[in-house]
Image (tube, rainbow, N blue to C red; front, side, top):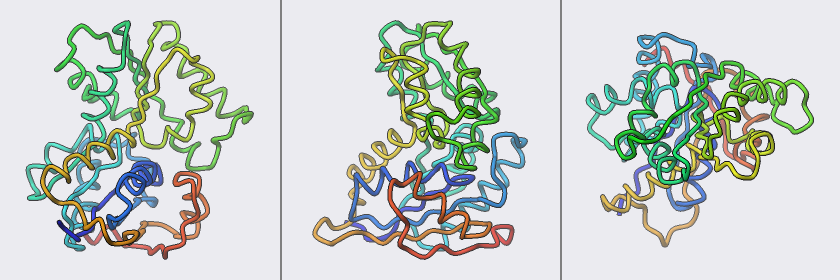
Length: 272
């Protein structure tokens, strides 16, 4: 048994979908979340900048004496996870491998769609994971650079003509290709599940990267005997951001499905 906390980070608020799933699966675990809200989004940045930011995020979280780090960011998971694993001596779990394996297992017609940030799509990481177990699967990938800023601005509701129009345009190639499985390759995207599901139709399975990452993290901690004592009550939740906490608190409830009752602190992430 291990009482140390789990660190979770993302470029903004999207990683809260993974943190929320972790809290649901492992309620006794303490979770420290860092959202780099001052530098969101990462998806349009260069590989060098993404790696620099990710290293700073990890360095900050490691000051809490963690037992594991969850990269709840599709961009960092595709671009920088190899370097982060090589540079750190604790388990680091990303969103790509769990989601890619789940998509390969879910598809029946061998056609998988993938939506993500520009950096995630450029990397080809999801395709490599899927091909490692099912080389026969066709992957149809589409970069969606407008989605993260719109989601962070709260444009997530059905009937919102702006988000529905943008989503429709991004999904059209997937519908034309006839995919039966769609990977939501960014932890922000689950907030658009209803809109995406309605536009894709009931026959398409949506793969939630945050959910799959949380499941994989729970499995790994159990295998390594790193779970917190199950007899204790709810684990502690701590939230940190790199921009004004007030904006984070207002929007975070959309991602978590509940109000944040714990304090949110601002961090000068450039110091790390």
